[in-house]
Image (cartoon, rainbow, N blue to C red):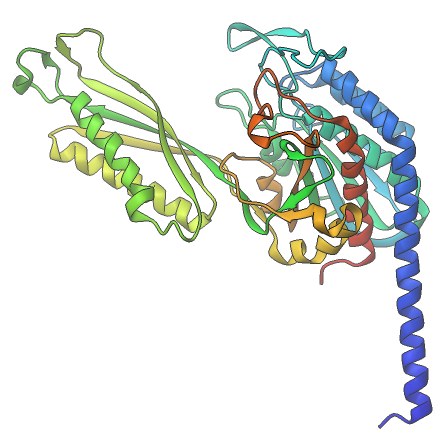
Length: 440
């Protein structure tokens, strides 16, 4: 048993170490805050330059050049041409420790900006996309993501000697998708070994939201964003005259039954109390004339799920429903499912571990649990390999009705730039706090 003096010495020593640790954390946070304040005008200017000069996925050449030039000027080890146009910067701290990765997506969308907000830096860029002349716009906030991560790189370079480990900055192309038949984006980056050399221990990323108020960070453990899978069903019957349909097998009517039955997967066949899911038929094509029953009908659609076992269950149900109904009608159905993007799944222990960092940066009341969303994000490929946390950052002007905020992927998309500094502080703090106290 410890004596009174020994116990007092132990408690005093423990308290002293705790105070030293807290002082180091507070000191680092103060430095990050000061550097973030200083760099905010540059982050906003970078964002405006990127917004005015958007580039589509896998064509982010000038964007990549801008990023690489900045990282090299900071003294980082820089790799370019990763997954075609991606850029990776490596910042080695002054002390040994784990490796943290931070990610920003770079690509714009084939959207023509309306400029309803009279921005002097609105995009006027035009290009050819899948054979059509289109406008190009950062209609999802990737320009802000790049600018914030460039800012984080500068902030953390300013505290380099105090970093207990390594920070890897991943600037990813083609988050919005690659050309048909191509592998790109996060999936290709992972295949090319972006999480190795040095091996990443934990990864953080965020996405600005036009319908979440500035100053707010939202999060969710486990499934935060849905998987995205495409399906194609080809129903083959027997062509006949429209006036004598009994002389053939009608794939149009058969397809109608299949479309209706597919809606019972989510409503009647999977446990929706576990997680949300969606099955949508987006297009049906078949036939050329009013009085001809065609020989086949093709339908395409999407499957969204927030739970991996449920995702696989939906795949099985969809195939069974389509083929069984077709067989019953005397037709056949060929079903193919292309798995596009996995569930964006936040590592539960990592989320809990880093929550105090977010609450310290934004304020406890401004860090909120959010509902999952059924859009997809290819950040999920990174999370399949390493523990990852993905967050939403508020970009909506204060006092705005979220229902009236211009949504992502639209010509009127808009974000309030005063929210960018919080994104810089959050990512920088997550990196530093994890390096100081990694997940066991």
